[in-house]
Amino acid sequence: MFSIFRDADQLENVEEQLHTMLASCEDAYRLATTAAFGEADVSEAGDQLMALDKAINKTERSIRRELLVHGTVRGADVDQGLMLTYMSLAKDIERIGDKCKDIWELAEIGANLGISEDVEELERHRVHVAELIAETLAAFTAQDTERVHELIPAIREDRDHYDGHVTELVMSTRPSHEASPQALFYRYIKRLSAHLSNILSSIVMPIDRLDFYNPDKAIEETDPSE
Amino acid sequence: MTEHSRGTDPPVEAAFAPWIETTFRLGLAAFFLYIFLVGVKGLETGIKSFGGDFVDTVFSNVANPIAGLAAGVLATVLVQSSSVTTATIVGLVGSGILPVETAVPMVMGANIGTTVTNTLASLGHVRQSAYFHRAFAAATMHDYFNLIAVAILLPLEVAFGLVTKIAEGIASRVGDILPEVGTGSSPIKTAIEAPIAWITDLIETLGWSSAEGVILLVIGILMIFLSLWMITRQMKLVMSGRIENAINGILSKGAGAGALLAGILMTVAVQSSSVTTSILVPLVAAGVLTLQNAFPVTLGANIGTTVTALLASIAADSSDALVIALAHVTFNVLGILIIYPLPRIRRIPLVLAELTATAAVKRKSVVAVYVIGLFIVTPLVVLLIV
Picture 1 (cartoon, each protein chain N blue to C red):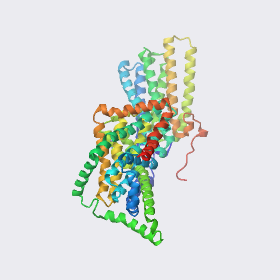
Picture 2: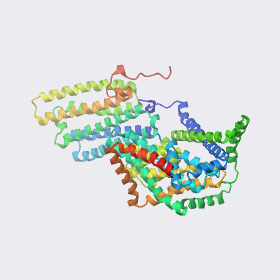
Picture 3: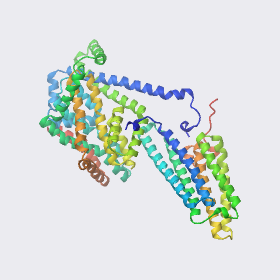
């Protein structure tokens, strides 16, 4: 009964939960794409993915509650900027989970990206996004500002690339059952990457510019040795 | 982001800082606890020096239980702290000037008066009807619980001296185990009395002996006020992590004995039931904590806040001070034992709070009538009439 009265750094706990959510997104993306590329049983992958998504959503709610309690108990002593940032991060990570579900739903409605004539290009982007999630998790955990300034511009380039693919597929004369799943896949990974970019922006951008990366407006790093 | 989330190891001084800060704040809280006890002693000594006739005239006005109740409500509303009121009452009883029987209704009044703080806190949510409805209900359920407890226990106290007799029984047992409590002398009492003796000497040296009673009374009340405020502030900072953890536990595990215990521990830790109950109001307003789950925490706060009076009784000369402090505990425990165990009775304060909140949302004037009427006009009118 007394265990609830132990001391704990609640913000540290929230940070750990954010890392766990992001790590779950890695798994969710892997499950979704293996189903969408016809490499796994759709229903089995779906069950695992839904369980992960449920856990991600539950953690988001838990983070919101804990931040509310933190703000209520600490009052004026609370770091409001950090609390708002955590709220925003939890939402972005939860949306990544949703995008993974969208990708899995492509398989559920019968699409198989693994047999497409563009499979190599699709596969390249699939792997790239998986790496990007892992890199975001690493940069977020280490609060690696240098890496963030490399990753966000790269994600912006990817976004243009995905848009190009979507435009090409929409304008193409290929059958809808081929073009549509691919266009949707590019659209989903574009949104997913945008959420990763938002997460990364929290490391370098001030609170009012969260999600709006601009290297000229980023928080200036101070060298502790100076 | 802030330093909080940086992945690097903290510098050596930062790693030690929390320990130093916690120790410093606990030391400050202990120092102000001492100041609090000195304040109670000063108040007691000051009142004693007024002389019997003056004091008899003042306290004859609150000899009527209803007037005592109203005085307790009004005094607590004015100082916004039941701890200050009950500590003062303990000091008055300890001086032998205020009889326990007269003081018990005043302590009950202090219980009602202290709820004004979270009722005022709920007004911060007035912009959004749904939020305000929940916030106002969360605040007023505490009022209704205390009003119902008083409605049941005050007549029993007046007719049979129920609360006083139980408190006397417990005090007598405590006296058997710890004979120095109340009447005896102890190193703590010697340490508490020393500053008062210095102040009295200083007053005499300055030639202000005729105003000694007033000066000691004012200094005593200021010391009680300041020390309780400082203890609450320091302990809140030290205990924030634990309080958060306890509330998160209540949010995930629900109501019941655990929530009641959490309410007691949180309030003992910060020495203020208003802090505990005011934390609950925004959580209920936001919808993450239900009224039913907040209720036992509120009741725990009612018990937790009685520790202040118990601490104050350490400084008093008379064993009656312990009796009135225990009467405060007894009143709150009895109130919970009568109202909480049976679901149908338990629901009464919650239903009344919901109804009041609904009326308050429909007409904002209800809020003003409720707050001013219950906490200011009614006790004032009662005092004037009785």
